[in-house]
Image 1: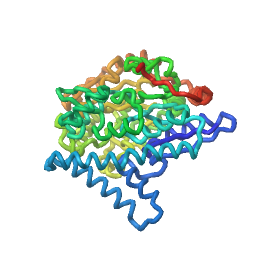
Image 2: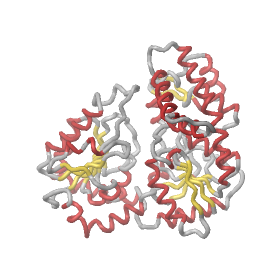
Image 3: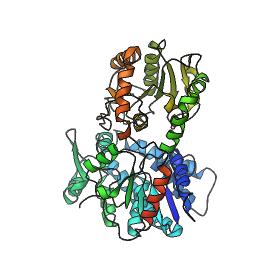
Image 4: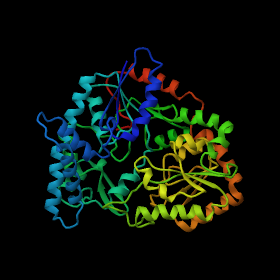
Length: 468
């Protein structure tokens, strides 16, 4: 069995490592990894476009890839400038769509033909990302597609991100025509009519025969199966209209790692915490510091004006209750840890390992609208969800072990209340619901291997994840 895994970000490599372990139990299984994420350095579609287009040229000269990436960044920054006229702004959309869409459509088809996989695996089916071209190619060539999600589908997320984007607003003849012809690309959000993608891209998709089932819903498409991590997640997918037959309860891609570290946590807790703190018996607060979401399109609803202010405020909140607990900070994979080392103190330390390695030792977890909240809940660890970016996602609304807050004053109050005596009650709520938020039994790789075999045997005409 040949398994093609396509990743578009280097941070996804850890999920590939887990999939290799699952495939190792299958006879004659071969895992082929492709995509910009298979090589370090690409963190955006624009950079991947530039680097890949350059790599295909027969004649190259030094610095060509770097110049191409810089050009793509400059064009995107120019397009976000409010000084551009509407005509020139739209012209950049046309150029971008004409250059990118046909190229990646053909490139994805060529990739699948060259690898000839029995199963195609992606971590998301996103109509605006590179994975979308690969999933479309799998439908065209009738290669079974398995999605092993590492993100939670939330239709509000792209709407919130693009509500101020001129490329996505329905405000001209072309966008009006596109919204009328293909109404499933349209959505009204916060009083604004939006298209999921720029209208030029949508037209090209239609001309090239690409079928997008539900553009606003992540992972909607023609997957043979979706490996969901929990009962709560499965229920969420069904609420979004996915066919139950497409959903297979397998567990999270790192659930066996969490299980392993959780099994050792009781025996090694003191030694694990002692490497960071003088008093390992104090409650341990593990914090997944949010990534930097600031840029040209910074949402005015963000509580803080800069990422530096955000980090400083979070750490000030921890210092205010430092006499009550130890605080272990995990830096987001996108961020550089050395920029945070100067912020350490005797009660606040940066974690040397990955989050899934230290999280099982936590008494409480602090994060901001992160999918890793699901990890903590599956471990029965209570969570403070400090949504300082004001995303308002409701992914963990049903979790009794999560306290949701959106401002610094509430953050200070909840920290002091929880560490001052309310921790046991919140912990019990999290423990009572833990089984609904994940499968921590050491059987993830076995279940995923069985699902890979099942998907490979279903090679043929793909059926949609939704009724169409």
